[in-house]
Image (cartoon, rainbow, N blue to C red; front, side, top):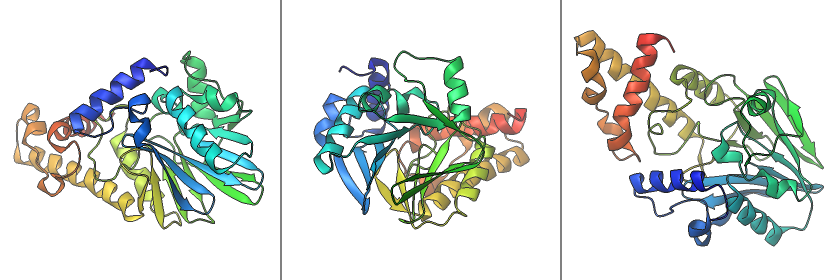
Length: 290
């Protein structure tokens, strides 16, 4: 594939682990990609392990996340099937390369690349040849982006996953697009890299207070019910409660991650492989405070 080869290999390995039909967001997956209209002018694009979002306004197109170069090219082609309006913005959800390494595709179309200040600052300190630096930054906990008659609220809940993690709220459409923070019917990814579980729980609780009816995701599905936010929070709280119970019982510390079982989630993706790793992450946060 012509995109980021490391990213493609990582997602292929994850897909193999989960038994997913889509191996990566690159050439092999392109036939499976599809565009889903979530609301008038608001779309999800992708398949399996990778879904971005885009909004067609009366003054141009706003794209949220690019994934790798191949995915970005496929996403642009899907947009061009719907409109020839200019790509006005590409917005980075957060700093992780796997979500933003194809930005050059939209930059070449004239897009202004926008990111939270925390994301941009991190990228300055950790540059990647595959990631285009943002042209503009926003800061604080909320910013409004208006284009034509369309509105997107950019919402930052503070620390949770990565740097500058942005939740996209579409108030007129009563939809949110959240990246990595909610993945329907999946336990936490592997050992929850770059997550603060406690802050993740807080964020989900605050996110659930927003006004919306449906959720767009970056992984597993294009869109689902608002209840998926509460479902993700309940999983994390149930995991923490199970670990606390083992600590109170006196279960030896090193045995707890393999002792904890949550059978109510055994049908969720990654349960058998990742539950012990999830438990380790939460246990170490409890024990070490970080």
